[in-house]
Amino acid sequence: MIEFEDAAFRYGETDVLSRLNLRLTPGSFHFLIGPSGAGKTTFLRLCYKELAPTSGVVRFRGKTIGDQDRDAVADLRRAVGVVHQDCQFLDHITVGENIALPLQVSGLNVQERADDLASLLDWVSLNDRVDAYPPQLSGGERQRAAVARAVILSPDLILADEPTGNIDWDMALRILTLLVELNRMGKSVLIATHDLNLVRAAKSRVQARVLRIADGTIQPAAADL
Amino acid sequence: MVRLPRLFAGDAAAARLVPPGAHSGLTVSMLSAIMAFFAVLVLALALAAGRLADDWGGSLANSGTLQVFGVGEDVEIQARAALNVLRTTPGVQSVRMIGVEEQRALLEPWLGSEAAVDGLPLPLLIEVVTDPMRLNVDSLRLRLEGEAPEAVYDDHSGLRASLVLTAQRLKVFAYLCLALIVIALAAVLGLAAQAAVAANTQVIRTLRIVGARDRYIVNAFRRRFVMRALGGSALGAAFGLGLIGVLPQASEPGFFLIGIGPVGWNWAAPILVPPVAGIIAWTATGWAVRRRLVRQA
Image (cartoon, rainbow over all chains, first blue to last red; front, side, top):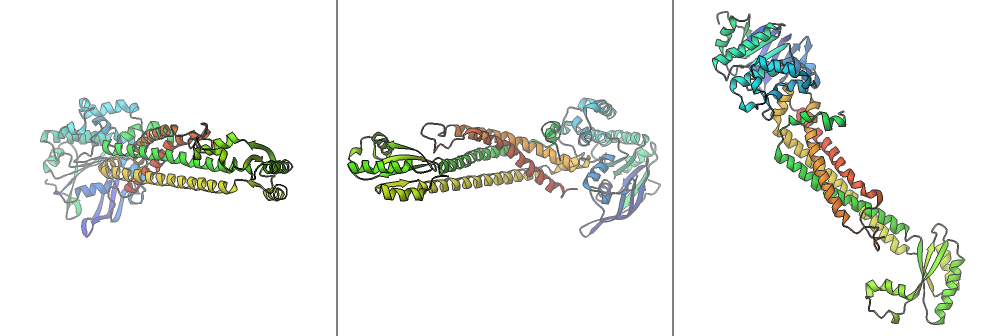
């Protein structure tokens, strides 16, 4: 699915990430854990080429994404659903329009997919919030809407950056459940989090591989998490 | 290349992705209106100057005036001789004596209606209509020197040359002003677009993250700016046309040679101003947004 080969990212004189060698296989479920500022978000941004590695190679579906032009990068991002911690909504359009945004920018007819959109809203329990504006949503509603937007194009890979960072535990479990359901549908899922309780809670629901990011590198985490 | 119908219809939803920004929107519309207003006035001036140059060069070129000086019977003898010369000169199409009343009317704007014109030593005037292509003025003057030495032929070339030169320079000046207005409008719209893009960096980031191509984002901004520029410039052009409508028209009596209002198809020319403003907005916005996008992942 996605593969890092000796990839590194340097910001100025600082090595943020180095010697990244890992592969996320189709249908896998990964946690990326580490303290704040360890480089989790940077790693995710390398996955969808919001950042480019300063050395090494990142491949998606076997293609080196560093060589791709801007249109190809746009296509890559349609195949990778991203759930941001701050959700990245457009506050002046409705929740429904925000969720349908990937459809719209892909040139797909949103009206023709109204049923799909309704099913998705039902899945994330936001049917009654479709006409609300993002600032009117609670933290949990925002995260669920972000999940819905990330999966509306049915991407193969879903990246979630601290998806439970600003919400209570019950809501965090609900978000986790949604992501586990997506994995059961065959999607690869990578969750970056510093919340080890979330990782432990997932153990009983899904077979997840845990990666730890520390000192700029990513290694498999110990089994006793 | 984006199709124009898509700009006006299909991408309305895309344009909504750009926050309205009421203040900058009003600025773009207002500046477009002001620029279009000036553009229409300057365009009318350029067209009128061009027409005046043609008129002054054309209408006056096929006419001349014969002045016969002298007193008493001598004037009649000289005039008769001069008329004989004119009637036998190739290129002279018609001649007409200008009577005393007509001379009085010609002098009235300068001397007033109460002036004692009768006491002035006025020459006898003969209007001559010519075919400039066939008339040899030098030959005519030589014949007049021999047969009517008191008659002087004026083909208006001295007056005409300076009038035509003035009109032509006025036309160049007007087109120069028009070009400056176009450049100023492009600069203003480019800056406004850059400001809007800078204020919406987060919107652009979100659109890129969800898979929008650069062209889609450019068009979203373009549509908004083009519509504002079109609306503003249409209003400005309408005001400009209204103002031109109250200027002296060439078709009005007495304004044939000096009326600066549009004539015929010239009325349609200002209609082109809003579409041109739209094209400028299209180009300037595209340039500004693309410039920002290449700096953004």
